[in-house]
Length: 50
Image 1: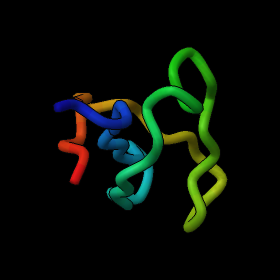
Image 2: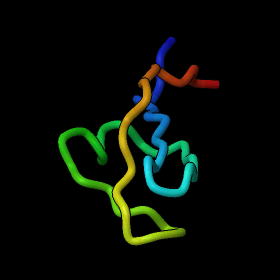
Image 3: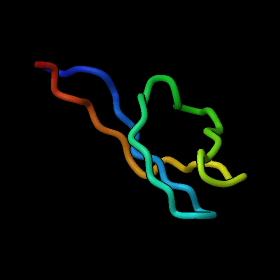
Image 4: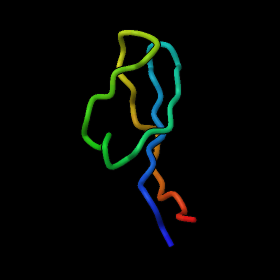
């Protein structure tokens, strides 16, 4: 059974990485928490529901 969509994001400016909810970040410019840049989606996957 599949769960929530997950998105792996990376900042091109500082290299920060984050695993974020894919449904909430799709098509949205996510600000980087460590610098003034934006996060870029690297890939997405379906999390397995327990």
